[in-house]
Image (cartoon, rainbow, N blue to C red):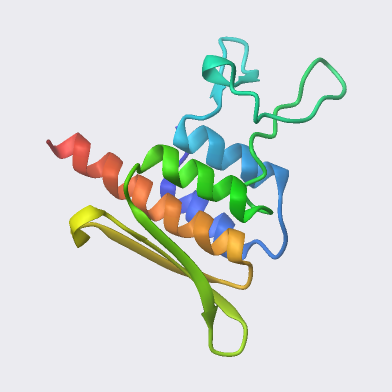
Length: 136
């Protein structure tokens, strides 16, 4: 299992989109999985998985670190009904918010990239939901 804190640190330190982060976020969220031989696959035939070279397929997952649409879609699948927003803060940083219906749960993040800001907020919210379910 991918450690949430390590993933958050990798996203915070990212200066550009990264297929490695796309894969890590997909694995963390469960939209990508590893088979018994350690190869990535997309459960339920997810057609939003891209890339092929070398020994078969290299799955990069959705391009969430470069595309607001891709990370938005992952957010909406993982958190139906949650509100999300991305906007500029001050002189250039991007601020992303995820807010649970009723305003109970929320995640916020800032990054130089709008997609990476929303990726950060998504991982924060996903980790919090996972922890909440583990306690329940």
